[in-house]
Image 1 (cartoon, rainbow, N blue to C red):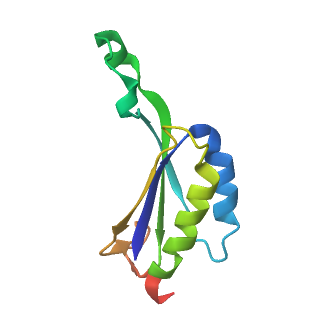
Image 2: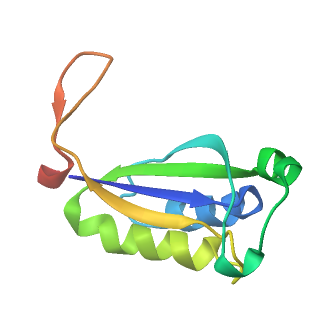
Length: 113
């Protein structure tokens, strides 16, 4: 089991959501709000005021999935979140050791489904 996690621009959420929903047997997604910034080398020096106020809204998208779904989910996120500009975000994959349902404590294994 893996977690596919991505930071995306808020205005790309609808496209990403729709693309994920189109994946057969898609397991679901969690989204939460975050703030951040991209710091490309070409940005140059920043003032103290800019350092304290340059955070921009981002979204973090998290999908728990079976190992065989990782590539299609990752591709759907990248294809639909990109604008081609600095600050489009990141996607990364994390191993998940175990998951239990809060409702009843039962162990979930998405790789066996």
